[in-house]
Image 1: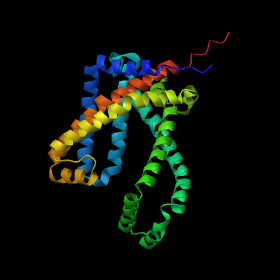
Image 2 (image 1 turned 90 degrees about the vertical axis):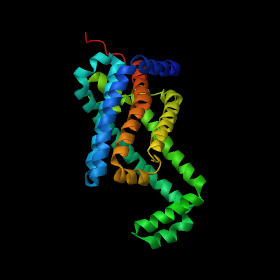
Image 3 (image 1 turned 135 degrees about the vertical axis):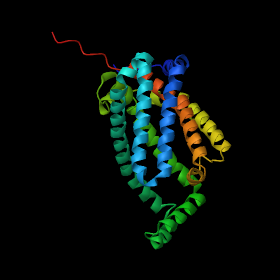
Image 4 (image 1 turned 90 degrees about the horizontal axis):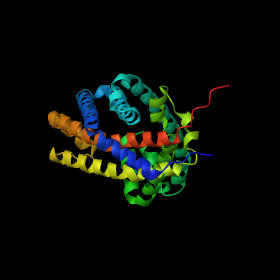
Amino acid sequence: MTAQFSVRDCVGAALRFVRENLRFVATVAGVGALGTGVIAAAAAAVPQIGLLTSIASTVLQAFVYAALTAAMLFGAAAVRGRLVGDGGRVWLAMAIIGVLMGIVIFVVSIPVVITLIAGPLGPYAGELQTAGSDQAAVMTVMLRFMQENPVAVLLVTLFFFAVWFLLTSRLYLAAPASVDQKRVMTFETWSWTKGNMLRIVGARLMLLVPAYLLTFALSYLIGYGFGIDPTNAAAIAAVAMVNPVAFLVYATASAFVTFVLYNALEAGLSAAIYRALKPAPAPPAA
């Protein structure tokens, strides 16, 4: 019989984890935020190393997530002695899942693009063909398409979000499993979530959507204080060039809020669900 879990219990466990370990969570978030600020400053100062800073950012996030997950599973005191191994395993697991998601999105994109060309994007096909390899012209046409067809854009966005959300829910136990079992775990966890995907989706929506909205609101307020619009990448880049100190403070403060209010809750939730669905160890052979 497939194991099941209580959404309320797991959401409550994640909230208790953050509340009861707030000092530890804040410390980990602070270290992660400082690292994020340094990486952001390096990326702004030397755009040519953008690929390296992007990779460094994912590694940092994996280590923060691993520390929070280990604290949920084993207690904050156990994190220091295992952080390097846990961080590396979580990063590898997330990289593998990221590659899978990229392949899935690419494959799914083919029928979506065909449908768009046959439908609302059809009238713009001639202009896109005329634009050819002129990226600026292509972007101009696509921006006009999005402005003139908001319903189609919304439906496509929701479709891709649903694909991503459902697949990541099936593989939601990869990080805590990798931490607990001290080896990279990805597709092995697929069967563990069988029959529980909708519960996982519900738990994520119940806990993480409010956390995300609060994180976004606070990050927006922090950015507003420095004259930065977090929704405008070009404006952020401009501030980074003109006022690097303000940009560094904004990037650090925003990352701290994200780690404390979102990543800590997500790590707690995934670890709580993992504990509920983790298969019992096989009995020793006679």
